Image (cartoon, rainbow, N blue to C red; front, side, top):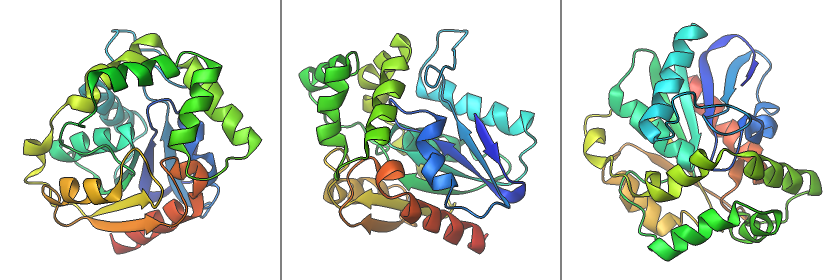
Length: 246
């Protein structure tokens, strides 16, 4: 976990499948120093451990709520990327005290992702070797990453716990949480990369707006799926806009 600043509403950052708290470092660097930010290592990633061997999305959401209690975060916005975006939606559906908004960054949709079994198996296989992660980056990134960014992605992915690697393609991607979102009235901002090959805007927009009709969409030119690395300033700007309205 990485924590900075003190002013609330705080920003709670949840990374993608394969990331870690440091996925958000460039975004946090764009924020005013006064803003409280908490970047989480979700269980199984960034060296975190699941002592109960659970890696399901509800367990990830439980962790976030427990963390807000431990850190005494009174008011906050959840910023979730990809898998973290689906965890953010689960949190919103629970309507916890203090949650005031969502920033969904290339989020997995609330409905099951239509990915064939063989493709999901291929995703998992790619996360088990340096060569595989390098090949996956060809799909994930819409622009050329710096060498340090590439090495960070590779290291974070390979470091992930096997249970955490299995959970998303085997269960999380196909989990349907849509019915739970119908009463969510929080403000929602969604960012999608123009070149995203994972969450394509024409497919993602109707899937989100059907259940979160208040969501405002921003398309980030030239970027792919790894927006926290490719377009940190765009995310920071949307986060600050969200905070200013609360």
